Length: 357
Ligand SMILES: O=C(O)CCC(=O)C(=O)O
Ligand SMILES: [Fe+2]
Image (cartoon, rainbow, N blue to C red; front, side):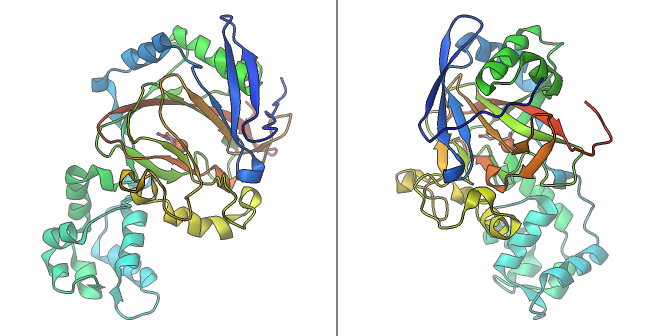
């Protein structure tokens, strides 16, 4: 079974695909390498019945809070705080400015948005110095308490605010047809999809601020085994908000860099700018996104639609190649509606992997 790679051809290219149930769907190229990353969209890939079946097999009370890698971070002791302070205070003025504090929040707790009012109300010592935090105040502050109360009172400030569960294909035989559809639209064989698919991850974003800040679905290097492809399903209609944004795409060619094949030097700064939910479409500005994402692809959640993209190159044998920094993406804040979605990640391995699939 070869790892075939879908040719995007060009933006707006439409490829009709026959499904096993006799229905025909259209794989539409929404972006290609010239606009940053090949991204494909398939409307009505899942039927309403399938979407409802997945949602009922993942009852709300069974879902667990989605975590990110920093959630298991070590407590911040005074000693650790002193070390963090030293690293952050680059200009050695013995105080941290708003930007440095934001960097600390991101690193320590994956908190990507916050208000100074909340910060200074919880940590009154810090209030005395306004938008700067001095060394002594930083080291003595109860950061663990601060993050845990922020998590309770403002879960929308953290990189990820959703609940989730995993659904194995053998436990849920009706998902077999979903895998067959993944094979049909991606051009991969059914056998290969079955062999390389992670259990389905089902996600529920609560209304009013459920979201997932920009991220990559797999690490840039050093992995034996990586998620080379993401297949993402929308399981309900969301009237407003909850868009999936491919922050690495640039549909109007607004930016001069060759984003598709740029490395970490270009992507580091871009990545820091899409963390805040303010990088998402803003209703107050006609759903426009701020620079440098003004022409990024944003897809409105619609029941049954699937999106898929490659997170890295893969050769016919399934050995992973170049990482695509431009696969960075996120789920924008919900507004009135909740949002149900699901991921099917397909794996490939490093050429020198110790582990054979
Ligand atoms: O919810 C979305 O639109 C994106 C979710 C996502 O990127 C993920 O679950 O990895
Ligand atoms: Fe993702």
